[in-house]
Amino acid sequence: MTVDDCLFCKIVNKEIPSEFLYEDDAFVVFRDINPQAPVHLLIVPKKHIRSINDLTDDDKEIISEIFMVGKKIAKIENVNKSGYKLVFNVEKGGGQVIFHIHLHLIGGWKK
Ligand code: 5GP
Ligand code: ZN
Image (cartoon, rainbow, N blue to C red; front, top):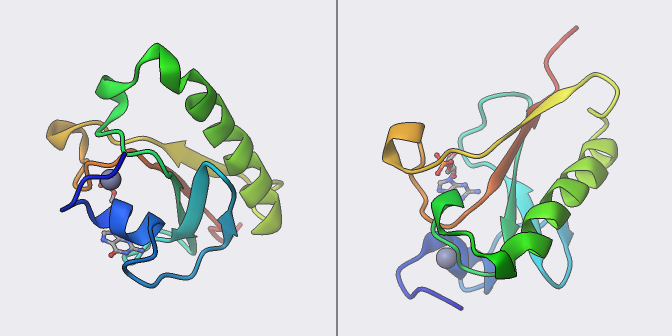
């Protein structure tokens, strides 16, 4: 499912060129344009889902797999041992500004 005016759908569909650190059938991973830490990645399901509030039973696999992708990417980015945050912002009050679900992977701070 795609939403015409969704920025992350456009990135997922390669209508807006972006460098993917990782891609599989269900996800893409790219760097946040405005990083809040030395490593700030966005793990984005290809399926358009507005926010955590909109998850259905059909999305159970996506939401479990997204953490497995996070774990894999943390190792590739070499923050797995030092530690990192995995964050979902949910709706405006929770700081969400892009209404296509995504998991932030944030880390790489100096020890
Ligand atoms: P949210 O606040 O919705 O959880 O996170 C959206 C994130 O997307 C923000 O951290 C913002 O910096 C990032 N972002 C917004 N537009 C773009 C873009 O065009 N490209 C990339 N790579 N990141 C973006
Ligand atoms: Zn979308």
